[in-house]
Image 1 (cartoon, one colour):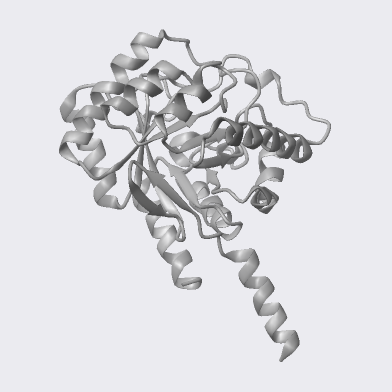
Image 2 (cartoon, one colour; image 1 turned 60 degrees about the vertical axis):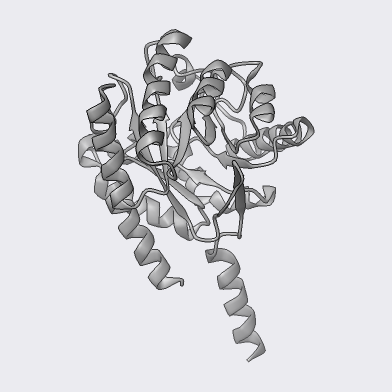
Length: 294
């Protein structure tokens, strides 16, 4: 019995995400059960065409409504494509894409949780002022020296991702002596800095596809539980990425099945948020996971 109890306890420790909460503008949002974040790209050049939405109000509301009805817990709005080699745009153009969309969705859906996907402090500030709840920064503050101070003042949750370089250069920066050790050290330094600056609600994202080869991405995914050492919620964004479609020798539009398979693996490894293009399928994956591990 003692051996059985020990095995049961060990299995539970390995399978169940830690019980995190986020303070979001006076609301306490529990991550005891994993959540789904739907991707809404207000860009003409994001790598998966199915995620792109033009900036017309009807188009934005149609996409947002669909994702909410399919079970999205968060919507992540981005106005700057971060695919490899993406075209750089001005801060003002990014604001012009994102802020009206935040306002439109917030007016229609006052309770939906909105994240702004940006590495620019001015965009983050304007979007939160318009109604966004979370800042999702691919650079964890590295691409804008004012970002962390702004997030601290805004008092909103902050998603910090690992990458090297920027979207224009990152694919040439995938050399690591020990990728897991280097990324863990990266987050150890970042988390310490966030705490010193008073950023209280932090979510970490290993940054699949950002300055990483296919083999490195799969290695990180297999070692996802290493990130639990920080005691912070973990966001995983695998949706339709090249690590899937290159491995399967297909393309992004055909990568939904592979995405679903890896999303389930990520949940088993303790992911707290899944950032996805396809909310319905991700929600179904989550429901099956919760049936297995209620």
